[in-house]
Length: 246
Image (cartoon, rainbow, N blue to C red; front, side, top):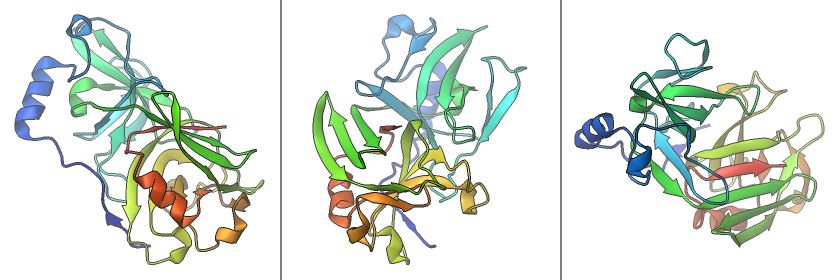
């Protein structure tokens, strides 16, 4: 499957990287909390932050260099877009700032600590996508108001769509296979049963060439939308948006 990368931001410039390393917290975080912790950085439904991974790093079980490694974070995703993380909180340990981030690994819901200087400038989002697999619905909330709603297809019982807290990691289009429709959003969620799939079995939101099957249990775990709906969502939902699947 060949895809084209669109909708991602360019890597922050050298000046931004230097300022980020010197100042620690980026724009949007109160200066009074610069050396304090833990400090909450993201809360779905209110204000969330995301940042590009600026250098390959190791996420650890605790905010210290000697802690057990949980996962390795690369600068690129399996689809060759810039990798990003959603920091949940920040803490300072021995003069170094650490971020607890959501990880694209199994089991879903795993988090780990990475050095603040290994990720770029914070970007803020106030959107929150909520998918209900029993009702087969998706809705996008912004500032407490629903701004998008659609019926969806979800995973079959033997290939269930995983439940939990995730985020929108990238935006992809240019598929040669009409199965995915005109557009897809990648997430950090992974299938717990299709782990041998290319890229590791990541869950996506995408269009379809079989709209008559929606709503229903129709996929290998991905969330399918009618093509008109995925294009409507594209106009309202930025990357980095928190995703709740229940």
